[in-house]
Image 1: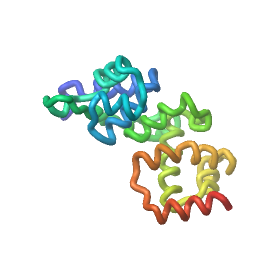
Image 2: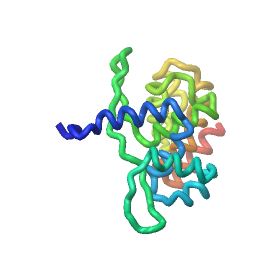
Image 3: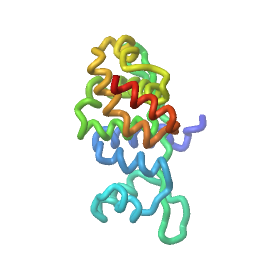
Length: 178
């Protein structure tokens, strides 16, 4: 068993902390995208120095011992199966980032984490020009307007975590205005 060292418990506790304290999700996702110093976290995310140190100490592994130290988010390797419908989703940095944004964007917080994981999959495909908001609405049995609002709310998460080509982005933006 590769998690004999307590990795499953650590991952579960990390995800639980991120759900209970969504303000931790943004620094977690930031440090999952790139190694950074505490000063980088303060400069880019604008928490106070004490808050930045608190976030970093709870979320990261030290990547080197040189000063200033650089940090990266602990990798979470956790797949969750829902009780209803046996849907399965994996806790990834983009999903954790989206969960953290639920506090400030009501459009993201409509269908729980499992629904958010599904919506994030559609949001990535939409920004790549592979699906439309109408297909998402049909598949999830929601209104096209609701689907569009959710996709727009998830757009910043998609562009921060996924490679989306400029040509696709331009085409998608034109299609969204139709």
